[in-house]
Length: 197
Image (cartoon, rainbow, N blue to C red; front, side):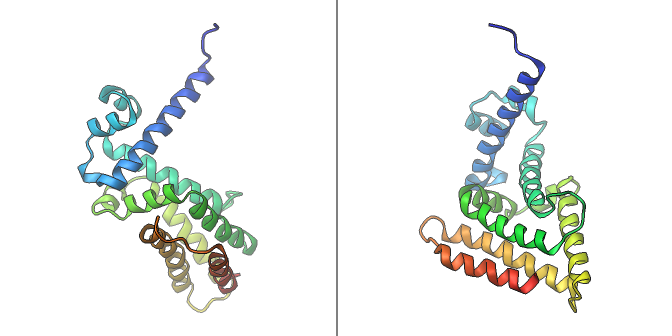
């Protein structure tokens, strides 16, 4: 058997890192961020506490990595060509894809939103890179609504954000007992698109 290459080591490390983040996301969402220790997180991920520190320097760093990963996924949907400019067709695709992602990966997004909404989490993330995504999202939407001639572009940023985030919160309260019919979700998406296209 030949020795592993540097690329193979990096792939294994990234795979383990993702495994730890997935396990931590579930624990943070179900037990609460404040109640999770590094020891509990490591045990839940199936690794030693010492090995956990090889991947994340602290519980706060682990939380920031989880949130940044989710926000990066959202921004890849929002600005797929990474040019910092939002066009009408990109907004339509974003709306379709973000709702599809929330439906197709419902458990992940329920956990993600549950963690973000916990007391104290926002304060831990204020000086972290994750806030650049939020600023970029807001700036791009504001410029889009200004360019489209909306009377109050900032109000439209708030409204669109609330429509999308509100759906995420609804998923939390509805899951798993209530399923929203696909036809109704399609109508909801279409209404948002008609408002802003």
